[in-house]
Length: 455
Image 1: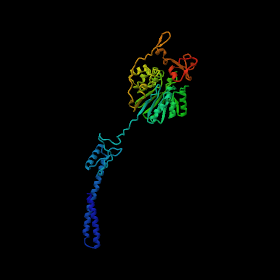
Image 2: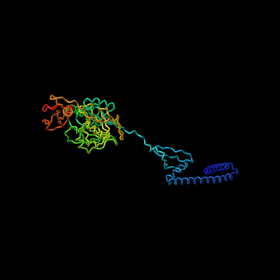
Image 3: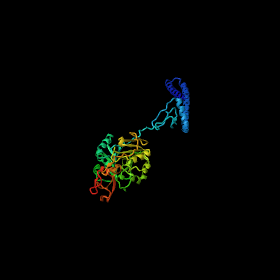
Image 4: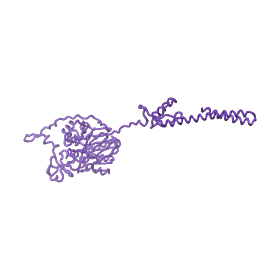
């Protein structure tokens, strides 16, 4: 019908031209061309009328299409697609659309089959961020490094002689700065290497117990802290948001203890469903004092190198770890870890790691599970080795494991002094902190010249 209109229009045009020519030549053909004009005009009118009717019908189809349900529209599109042999196109961020055919405009989107995916529904799979916790082997001491991309946390740094090796270890991990440094308490086997660390790296935040000491190790540490000019604060309940999924919390245990170990800064690292608890040298007294602050965890850094003075049964039941790490020195003079602690861990089916037997322990987590760089050690509970008895002049034998073993001799120190004393010494009038003889000597304390304690 569109062709009729075109032919009618062309006929009219030709007839008008021929009439003009006939008029100029004054011949008798004008009448014939007039008849042609009438016929062409009729054809033209018929063609135009049909075109108008077609457009109106298609417009009505579009209006009716918009009123259809999604399923009905999909059927129309599919039929239209099959009829015209058109292929669908994919538009980024949208579901499948079809190129329009004839006069039907697809303003709606097609319902996809279950097997089809839209571009917006395909989520890019990102690698889950990995967090590593290094329990660095520094002998009879503590040093823990938490490595999460550009965010680094260091808890203690071993003895004085361990500083350089700790710095070297961190540099091999491409550490450029440290966001949080924790000095759990002012004993040399925890703060000894921190002055070297502070000299080697920029540190943003420093947290310690707020307790001081007169030892050279503490003086070196505190001097380095002041030179660093970091954000320093004594421990209290704190939370550091490392990411949307990771927090690092400080648990305040109080200030009513006589033993400096119980002032250790206690921290918890939480990554989604995985928790690490770092206890410094916290002993049973502090564990029980704030037992309600603890909760189920996955990894426990065993307190005080596995000493029997820590990891009380109530505390172990409360935190219920799946894994435990003991940081201690091989064949150390304290006998750490003690049999009592090992027995508790074994009875609780805790997978245990030891730096004295296995070297540096590395725990890796994605927030859902934890894996280690080495298999857990096998806990073997043996009787304490019996040292040959010491003979005295009256031929009486004294078992060294009970009376002559200096590691079990208790002496006393004060909050501010540099000497250790026997019970009853007048120097203990203001403060009196029990400590084993070997621990006192290891921390730089010397015997009091007034009360003459054992050496």
